[in-house]
Length: 475
Image (cartoon, rainbow, N blue to C red; front, top):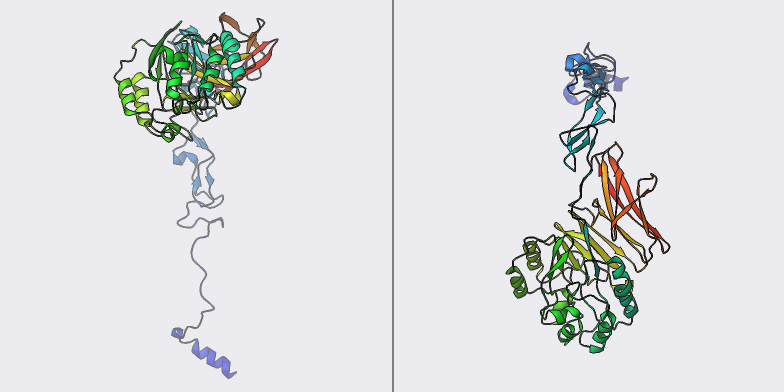
């Protein structure tokens, strides 16, 4: 009893820290108890009489959020469809006016209206519902590109390279064949040069139909002397670099030949050496004003895992000076397709080992390239451009859904029974028409809905079949 009395006496003095067992409850509001208490605006179903219209909406159901603040997710601004400025009647219908196409679409309130106008690729309408097909002028011009033969390495290159020049190149009949260095494995061993000499003599065309540049293996020791005496290009032009014009059906092709193995010691040339003197000599030349296509040949790539170590900026200045659109190279013994800015870099593999070559084309403004083997048939879509070429093609374009897409492809074979067909997504195969030797065309109707489509061209002959697939973006 005395302890209870002592406790009661102590609790009579608050400063002694005795807890007040009769303290009032926490007066702060509780969100979710169904009662609106400041600063709550609503709680549960109690919206204090608020509606969507009080918050600037035209209708819908106002909700109370978990934070006791009104939630307008179910509110709407319904506009009477008769107030639509440019109405249409059928979703998915198209309209072509003044060279621009638009599509009838439904808005959030299910009102149909004509969407944004997209210019036709051709600039004109075929009729009130569709664009006229785009006319790609000039047609394609194409080249064969090989690199890193490495005669003397102990491979089968003497047989395969002779087959490329004697059989495949005539079947593909390119505007030119380019070889971007390392013809031999040891440039100071003349027997290797004699083997290379025997592989092309009587098979390769005369320069500039057949052009070579030197690689770092070619200029070892006395290699430069042997290069000049055992290559068609060396006998034709004693310089190891220069600018060459090639006449084609679409106009002149300007080819810049460079020597990225111009160092005084082997380690420089292995890593790539593009001298200041060479760059200045090329920059002093006037680019052809009327060139239809501009190509630069080098042994070392300017981008990638191992790029041109000494003189890369100088090389880029030369590329810009001539307006080069494609940079052909080798050196790394693996193929690669990428971009150095707006220039398509096409790196060929080691032909002596992999027995592959690159087919490169320009069709209007579209660029294309593929790595191909020694067995045909060989096919490549040249227009439209592949948006994934080199990872992300900066020159690719999209097309208006519901229009007609002109498709052009190169198709070659060793037999005369070659046919080409084109397919969009999983649609039926459509026959293509051969419009010139090696050139095939077809018009493909694009679906009305915007999407990413798969476009495939298939070549078939008694040799076998081959396909090339790209993406087409419609909007």
